[in-house]
Image 1 (cartoon, helix red, strand yellow):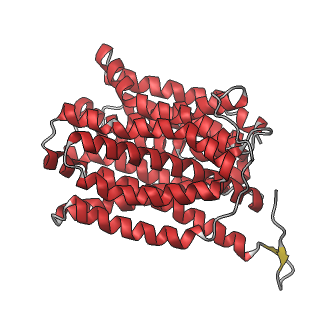
Image 2 (cartoon, rainbow, N blue to C red):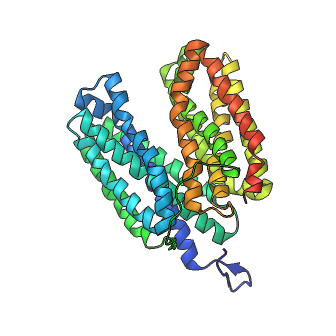
Image 3 (cartoon, rainbow, N blue to C red):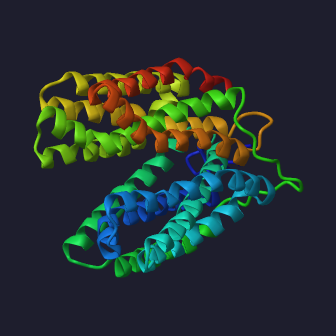
Length: 391
């Protein structure tokens, strides 16, 4: 469904101003989602110290967020099909911003678990519904723009993490920091919401269904990608220090370099998608991620391994946007339900990846377990053809 285009003074077709505003509004929503999540993650050590939690207790408490996330996926898919993505993203985004300060107010591990459940629930609902809005905007533009939305999420994550680090350095407590982040995020969202695209719901919203057919293949691409991203997030620094003997500072750069590569790659992802198509881009992404992991685990030089993780970031950067765009355009399936369906596998991969890598590393070695991630990246290349059949 494409919006009608106006003809400008030069004789060239121009997009309606309201569509440009909708695109900027979705950009703002993606940025806020990444910002709020990273703001929380950056202050986990301070929350841990405040509540006096040991590592095991913290691990159990943090499990509240993924539980909320997984519960939210089918509910969000149904809500979007019933009420439309505009209403769902409005409620989810504002709720997610408002929950953030309660993570600092929690007086115990149990109450923090409950707060994290709500935080994970609202984050997932915001994630799925804002991607449904992005699909609506992309359809009207009639050209690839999904990757740029995801670039704003990654950029928001970098900004949130940086601000959290500055706040920690200045000894600003989690509560005042979260309050400031909430006020800023609410201000941005209240300005953006009015420009989002109204989407009608269906009187009898479809029920969530486990992905089948094309959606199952697309979900497997997200599973492999999410598992790889989670593995790099949790294990790249450990690998650099433990297996290559790098300094802690250099080891910490591994995930930072990976994240920067993700942002840069997503900023250029739409142009690459337009030039090479989603199938070619996904195949190249899987190969590049596998090659980067192979370079990292086969090298004995820390700086070369660091370059490998940069290549992994460039390989993975466009896969989530490509799959979400394709899933939102599968014929005969409501976009909200399709996105929730494939996201279930993607988030499952992200959640099970780090502990799975640890188990495989315990049985074999950390390089061998990262080699398994490389093999899954090659599976992405094999499944990439589904991106063509879904559009």
